[in-house]
Length: 164
Image (cartoon, rainbow, N blue to C red; front, side, top):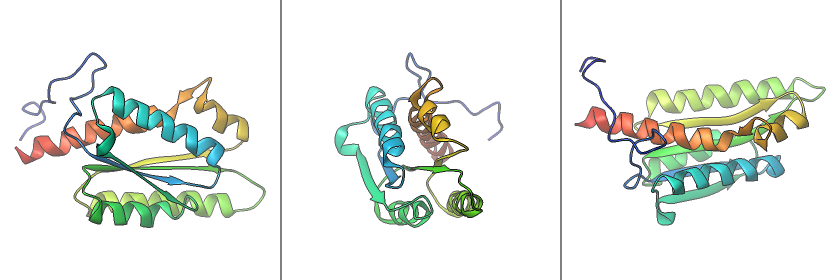
């Protein structure tokens, strides 16, 4: 199928495909929960606004951002979902731990995408300051959780189009 032949499903007023038949898993890190809870709220609200039923959203929690890899892997295998959204937040500190967690988590989620059958959305905030995290979880920059959910809807649609 050429890029010119590809077309998305019918889109609603917000330019997203119809998500009423889609099922989503969300894996949320408990670390920095004052941020990740807001991101989760933004993601769930966006899914619901786009027709996803409450029973079609599975939310699971893991201790930290690095554990998102395992959580997402398990949900893709056993969760009966069409896409998984990983939500975490790592705020830079004084040690290289930030770099290791960010890189390891990003690599792990990328590997799941490459090897898996369903999309895994990288919703890991990697910020330098607490203020930046607040800005991106409902503050001046908006709520990135909404963007993670919109991306998940688009990627499920993409995958479904390839199955036709």
